Figure 1 (tube, rainbow, N blue to C red):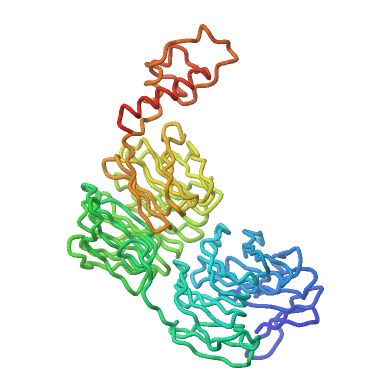
Figure 2: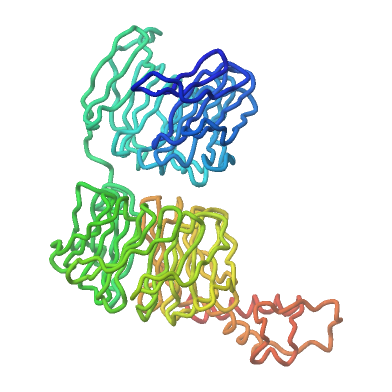
Amino acid sequence: MLTASRDGTAKLWDAATGKEIASLRHKRPVNHATFGPQGKRVVTVTAPGDGTVKLWDAATGKEVASLKHKDSVDHATFGPKGRRVITVGAPWERTTKLWDAITGNEIATLQHTYPVSHAAFSPDGRRVVTASLDSTAKLWDPATGIVTSTLRGHRGNVNYAAFSPDGKRVVTASSDNTARLWDAETAKETAILRRHDGNSLVYQVLRAAFSPDGGRVVTASVDGTAALWDVETGNESAILTGHRRFVNLVAFSPEDGRRLLTASPDGTAKLWDAATGKETATFKAPEANVLHAAFGPDGRRVITALSDGTARLWDAATGNQTITLRGHRGHLNHAAFSPDGRLVVTASEDGTAKLWDAETGRETATLKGHEYDLNHAAFSPDGRLVVTASDDATAKLWEAATGRETVTLNRHRGFVVSAAFSPDGRRVLTAALDGTAKLWDAATGKETATLTGHTGVLYNAAFSPDGRLVVTASADGTAKLWDVATGKEVAGLKGHGNGVSHAAFSPDGRHVVTASYDGTARIWDVTLLPRGRELIDLVCRTLPDDRQNLKDTEYVAANMAPNRHGPCDRHGLLSPVYYGRAAAAALHYFRAAGG
């Protein structure tokens, strides 16, 4: 048991004997104390004045970290895995803060225009909801501190907010005499729970909570009454035609690019005709969210990774499920076939990846070594290696035959969300929440290039089929193309109205498809984009050599062709005049190509 007292202590007690185990001492009265989800940590909050929050080891009673707000703290709570703590400032302080519960370091400040009244994690810890006196509630990504949605509609203070047990809904309680239900994915209001019309203060709703099965809501009002409500789900708005929630993945079929595969948290993956946009098949898992989906190498099978910890194999022609892979103890964030289709790799939030026989469903190996959740896993082109990406800011290479770790890639400063081999297997590409993608030597683990230029976190990165280009997808609403040889940006794909959640090349490399949180998927023609060296060679063949007419100070490094191959050897450096002419030549090139 845990108690908090005005005597400046919180105390731990043996619930069976009533014996005091430890005393957790502050210099001021302790107003709030709570256990972490595994009972290993305790967080305590002092009375208004010094803004002190402390983390303690529940076994020893020793202080682990001290978290400081500028002013006072109202309450604090752990995330569901105990790795993060959220603190809510007192009514006169407008901020909520996220902290690393292991180190005590501040991760992000979540700020409204008016004071925050309450904050809570979603059951899986992937989102935070805050309620504020500014009449809104906000949903946040706790990894980045970025607002993902704002819940607008109340006409008074929002006093409380909470997630449903499955994390799919949010309920808010307000001084406008209503509680409201919201779809946590789309931020759409789905129901208004109103007992009284009028503006009397006694009808303000102070608290609201879901029943354990998520089917009912209970509200508490100033008038001293409580009420039970049936949660009316209604129809969810379609983001992509056919899906009922946002699309978190889109990919071309590998054999001919004529089909598209999409996955959504609505419990389905879908196949579409890439030419007409017509839905051709649906793979349903209504009891779980589809977090990832992928084709088999011949396009005849599809694998889905689900929030219930299973992966499922499907017949792409009929939509029938053929095999269920069970063994993980957490959500599956990724699944993929080996190049020959004989094996499957799955990546889970339980910190492991597993290898499976794709014909029998038998587990063949477990890849252990990461400290935190795995986000991604992929085979090398020859199927001999597997790369995994993790929340521990590393990627690792493994032998597929033995499950032995061979290399750790550890230069990122944020969660690594995706990893992939180049088509020749010589390079590895990683994308991370630090806003960068990195290229690595697959044999040595040495970093060879960092792709910087996005203004938001990255969600994924992929090689083109010929290995010469990389595409990255970002929360900044763009996808970017990069030259692998130079590490330089080739083009920005702009047009989405929200973050780009996924990007991939078509099998022939002529197109890129992007999926976005704006509810659309887009196909981009990249055939009119000349490669960097091809363009500089074109310019050098077109322009006369004017080196003799320019001073040395007018020359700048020709970093578009750092190795100075081809016609550029005649002068090696380009002047500002040449750059101007290069722009004109490039424009002429695109017009001639019909671009």
